[in-house]
Length: 174
Length: 442
Image 1 (tube, one colour):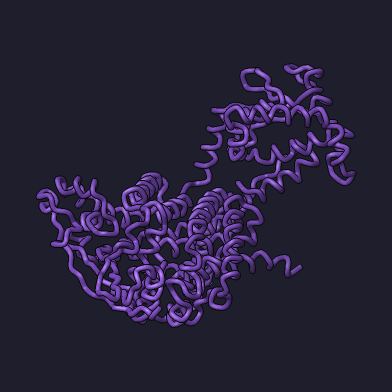
Image 2 (cartoon, each protein chain N blue to C red):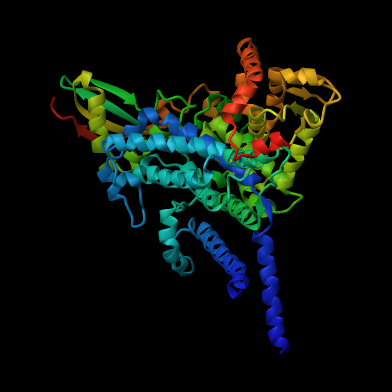
């Protein structure tokens, strides 16, 4: 009898508690850890936020937008070099295009984690060229102005590009 | 005494406001639209991943297991941390794709959604190199769907429930599901979308490229989103790029505040959808944009969907299907067929108990008939063919009924054979426990 009277109230209370908890997690998750005001509830919510993959700043296209491209140079025993871009053949309409771009950015940002293994994969991929090494190169585009376009130049032209070697990976002997 | 009463009144008012905000009695329609959209998007996305499955998530793929584990934090869980054999990955991916399809059509939704949530988060944590915004959004929306009572409308689960009710009586109506908890889950999804827009705006306000108005130009001239037509347009009309940059920030700031008001919601919603369509077609972010639009559709009020359904029903007009109530097979088929008619566009008439003024009994002995609003009567296969594109729940059958030449060539003989053997089929199918027998006796 008492249970019947209190059951709906208890359910309402549990539902409300969950809503408040999840709403707080939604709001807190993107806030950068900086103040005690945020850090205190965040430390309690963190397991929940991580488990459900809510840990995201939602900073789409900010503070920067793309602008880098990963190329790799395959070098064989004679010193001949051939350059490739892993994402250049992927269709714009296929998510493969984004997957490859993301993988490339990971190699650029964390070469110590991913470059060696990526190099191994590419050595195997280009086995017919008998590669001795794979060199990853980051190509950064920028500084292209509207007047450049009107003067017949293009954003990906070499003059708007800087190159930086990310890492060289030796291929295992065949 | 007065003070305690004041405190009591204050808490009561707060409680009422809380209930008003969260617990509005709502049908599941907005959540179902999101379910169908997210399920379809995930099905396509993960199907396209099949050729790269072992590269993306395999032990020796783009992200070796050691690298993934080195980034692992407490509470980061992925089933692929424990099951990494190729056959296990292939088997799970097959199951996962089946669950995506099941979520889309709403089959066994109550547990399929949990498999999808666990699977999706597992894929994300297994290879963090591939993750971009949409993966986080999908996780968030999936979790809300997991706690929400989705699958109660516009789903095979609903079709099964309606069919069960109609087996006892074809005219039975199963009332649409609605609950205050549904309203709370819709609100949670809306809050999620608002949070995304709000923080996206805040991050842009800290970025020079956005504050200077150059972001759109930089975007289209970058290697990632290079678009020669857009660059050509912006090079000669740079102000369009400025306008688009500031317009995006303005929309992202305005959205969290103005989307809640009845009068401004349609405009904000339309603007957000247009923004994501532009992302899709100008930047190639199809999956991201589609999922975002599906999330935004949680802001479409249930009464707008109801008005749309009513307008569709008015435009098509009521149809009447006349069937043979003595034929158990016909009743079962009708129960299945009508279960897909969520808008209740089709009325039914058993010619054995209620003869039709339009179609004679002799005609009815040969085939089922559909009477159209203009008084025309279509028999058998043609009746089904007419109904299928006009009833939203049956539209998935359009390819079967409208394949040029072939549909009619095969459909007519099949229907005629079934109609002439319906007594035999009925005797094979009838089980005394079902309501079909009861209807026949009636």
